Image 1 (cartoon, helix red, strand yellow):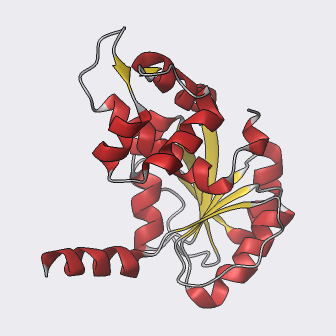
Image 2 (cartoon, helix red, strand yellow; image 1 turned 180 degrees about the vertical axis):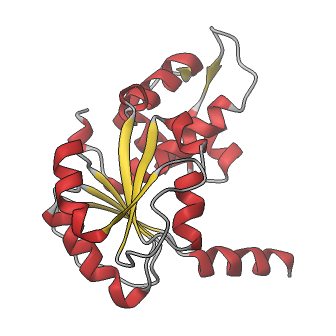
Length: 206
């Protein structure tokens, strides 16, 4: 199936499948079923089957997938080999933490720069990545052909920032602001709700 036809929700779960498979001890010829992956991740089996079918077909009857082939299919769909560039707006503590985190590169994604409306913030992070004035955002994104944007500003500014990203050609947004964004249909949105994640942990303790 063409990546453009893969549902947004499925695209959002693909990194989880990839991380799970890479964490297993597998030989080159090991096979794994959608049911086993569903159990391992505590997800619905039907949903997992549909997700994997969108990326790598339906697998072999009573056998499942050759694990390494499935890993390669997930990597290709996530464009791991293309070193996708991303930028973020909001160079506060959260933004800087994401900017300096190197783990994204394992998935072929590199946050190359941050932008902030405060011209007094440092021009570089501890990892020497640029922190630029917001007025340079549109030019930078077009010159570098950036397609992924990360929002780490407050809720009051998030929609304005999202609009700037869309205008600059951003096609996918990872939003940490606690608010709903109004975006064109062609723009993929991944909403990160930190409060909900913490509430889930508290609920599990009870």
